[in-house]
Structure formats: structure tokens, C-alpha cells
Image 1 (spheres, each protein chain N blue to C red):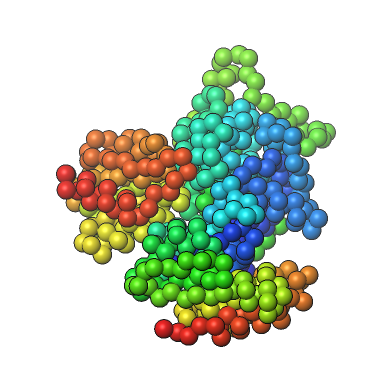
Image 2 (cartoon, chains in turn yellow, brown):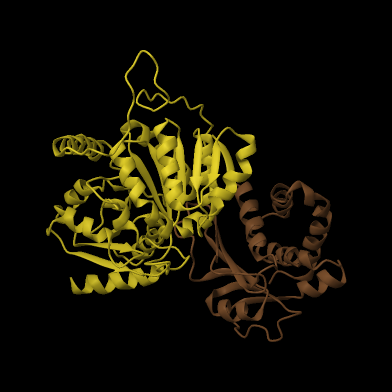
Length: 354
Length: 181
């Protein structure tokens, strides 16, 4: 068993990055994520990573591009408005196929918004975000423990597929403390023959670029990316289920909301409602196939996506269910976390209608 | 058994530390814990609170709507959280600064003049949260007294360790203030 600590999500993420062999952190403070850079700055003298507080998120993302391109294990963290500023760079990084780990501790938007927790960056994170045909793998932790576990996983997947990976969490998980088991530190030895580490005599120059002037070359690059995304869709779908085996109503939610809906499930079960929880841990690739299977089962009456936004993931649920069963939505916006009983009451009303 | 709690007061009164110490102590006893702060545009003098859950099983939501235990240090917090204490739940309130106490009869309310005792008997108002902790531990038995001692020792930075005896004394005084109902 690893070391047990009581930690904030943001600090745990920082500690996990150090233990997973972090070599470069580039970021700009923004609430509710600032504890990450604060923690990493405090720990920096004891470790071997480079930490730079950039002059803006634009600068930070391009430092990620550079250091990641040189083969370093790199991380940046930010919150919604900052993540918007990074999108151009993420598009370049996806095209140049550079492993980088991003974490967006989401706050309410649009605009400068509020500092309270939200899930309104789902579209931005899962459908691209920047320009061009690309995806990042999107991991959605729902506990401080998963903040740690998904840092390890995120770095691994980034290296394995040479792709940017996003941890999409929210202000509540960043700010709250829970018991967390920290894994043993690993000695990171990058194996990246493509990295721009200086030309040696025995090989050609390594070039990392996202510029392909000839359409044929650009299409070829796109085909390489799409092939990779197909592999990711095949291999990396992750989800978690709770009391779903005999359920006739399935709640779908991720991140903090899935903690609240777990309580809704317990409340519903006590009152005789056969409700279960389906929680995507990867938002891209989304577990479309598994939900489709459930949609085909007779016992299922309907699905309801519960989110802290105006209805974003519900579109992926509808894609998966493909009209086979009704798909409902319940959400709160602007930094409000829905209460477990308010969700229960909503489902109760829906099930009377169905 | 899940216990849902809230600690609320002015920023600077030590409500977040109180919650942290309790969560840490419970973790050391092998329990599942969660601690969730209000992290809006808080400032010294403004109101702050944290919700703490302690359970033998995995905790679902870290955010609670009703509470088994509420500890409040100022009037706005009393007004906000008194209605949300569960029936037969515990409400500990700071009685030397809040002029009008709780009105509900279906809860177990304890008046604790923590600020007065801390300033008059211990000459340090900062430990008033530990007086409240003493009262809380006594009436709820939520964690062992030794676990609070462990939590203090392991969460306070080394440079404050000379204050450990004072904190323990405050804890003891809080325990002596109340009788379990």
C-alpha cells in the first residue's frame, strides 16, 4: 500500500506529477487551480523538474510544445478561460504529435465567468477545442484519488499515442480534500527517438511541425491522426458503474456530478426506484458502445444525463442510444452543484410520465 | 455510518482548520473522509465554511444538504445552518458573540462561549476553534481525543509545535464545558 495522505485535489495532482517523473511544468495561476503551481513551486527545490510561471497561458502552452517536443514529460494546469487561450497551441501539439498532459480545473462560464465548479467545458474538451480535425484523450476524475491515478495514466497514454491528454475536472474536486493513496515514485526514462534533442551523425534530422503546405501531405497527416484516434477509441474507453445490473433507469454523469448522483441512486434505491449510475471515466473516447448495449435491453426505461452545464454530454448519450430509448437531461449552470434530492425529484417526475 | 457535518464562521476563526483536523483524525482511525470548503470570493472577516463527511463506507457526495452536526461561530452561519440540521442532530454555537441562540427544540443545541474562554482564560483567541472541537468530540464521540492530538501534531507545521500544549489545553476545556445529552 502506498503512502496515505489527506490532500486537496489540486495538490494531489501536483504530487502525483512529481512521482510520475515530471520534467517540466509551465503554467499561469488562475482560481480554482492555483494550488497546483503553488504546490509544485514549493516542491521544486527538492526535485529535478523545471517550473516556469509563464507570462500567459499562450506562452505556457507553447513552452509545453517546445519542452514536450524535446522529449520531456510535461504538464500544465489551468481553468476554463485559460484553457480557451491554450487551444491554438493544443491544436499544433496534436498535429505535431507531442505527448503533453493538460489539466483543466473547470469553473463556470462563459466569459470570465465564476470561480465555482462547472462542467461547461465538455464540448470544448471532447470535440476538439482548437481548429482542425483532432482529439485529445479526455480523462474525467471524480475523486482526489483519481486525480492522482489519472496523472499516471495520462502521462502513459500521452507517450503511448504521442498525443495531448486532458484531465477534465472541476473546481470542487480541485479544492476538496480526501484520503488519497500515493503510488511510489517512478524513475522516468523517456524512449522518444523522434524528439528534437539535437542531430547526431547516425540519423536524419528530427522535425516536429504542424505545417504541411501541400494538400496531399496535409491529408496524409490527417490520415495518420485518424488512424491513431481509431486505435484510441478501440483500446482506451473507460467507465465505471454503480447498481446498474437490475436498473431500469440509468443516470449518466461524470466528475463531481457522478458523486452527487451516486447519492441519488442510494436515495432512489431506498424508496424502491430501480436506478443505476453509469460514469464515463474517459469522455473522449466516450463509452458509446456500452451505452448502446444498455439501450437495447428491454428493462431500461430511459436514460438521464446529469451535468453541471446546459446539456453537453447528453449529446453523446443520445448518439450512443440512437433513438432506442428516451434520453433526458438535468443540469445546473453557473457554478451551482445540483443536490442529490433535487435530482431524485426530477427523475421521480419523469418516471411518472414515462 | 455516514456523518455529515458543517463548520462555519468568519474567515480567520479557524473553521477550515477545525474541519481539516477532524477529517485527518478520522482518516487516521481508518475512516473514509471528505472535506469540502466554500471557496467563493472569501476574505478575512467574511463568512467561510467547510463540509466534512466521515463514514465507514465510500463517501458519495462531498457536498451535503442536511447535517448531523453543525458548528457555527457567527450569527449569519447560525441563521443559515440551523434549519439544515437533521432532527436530533447536534448544533454547537458560539455563545459569547451570538446574542440570540437557536430556536429549534428538535435538535441537540450546545452553547459554547469559546471566544470568551479563549481570550480570558487562555489569552489566545486563535485556539477558540479547539474549544469548540473539545465540545464536539465530547458530545458526538465522532473521533477519539487521541486522534485529535495526532491530527494536531501531524498537520501543524513544525514551527507551530510549541503551541501544541495550548491547543490540547483548549481541547480539554471545551470537553469540560458540555455534558452529553
